[in-house]
Length: 265
Image (cartoon, rainbow, N blue to C red; front, side, top):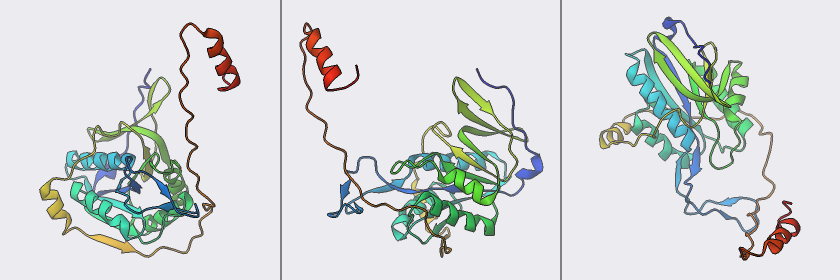
């Protein structure tokens, strides 16, 4: 059952509000992953890059909120940490409707490093709401949003499945086992969003693509921060063994295979 409580923020907070959407550059889910010869890295040759799906939904919801805010939301900014190969996804974010984009010019080495770099930028610019996808589709770390809130010393809400206006109030719900709940948090804050935050990601229209060429995409120098982890070696999953067919009448053989090979009995 759903919790009937609602989160209400003071309406003055919604004047000239700024939203930051954290996005990451990930391989398309249909990309066949290959490893380098020494298995120290992933071979990026021929990889098709896209916006991380959870981040793309977060961006879509941010644009929807801006459009229905009646001018209370002034700006939506997209940000990523990465080298020049990341710029196409930022251009797509601008084409979808983001007002400006920021690329912190550094290789995204781990969650800690990414969150720390973004935090240093936020400290200079100030945002009321920060959206971060719950995880990325490549490494599935599920850590950047929460780390970002810790670096900034502001509240965060995880598993957010709905963000909306209700009159002059701001309502935020999160999914829990058996239903949903709405929790209190003061702005500024980080919303770690999951599936459901938007129905479908927006597809850039031709007009948006043309306008994106004139929107600012700034490149920021990284700050001197050490990553806390490193990749030693990559290994592809072992191939699955061939399927064994068991006659429907041979229950004994099935039991034996489940017990001795599959180890599930």
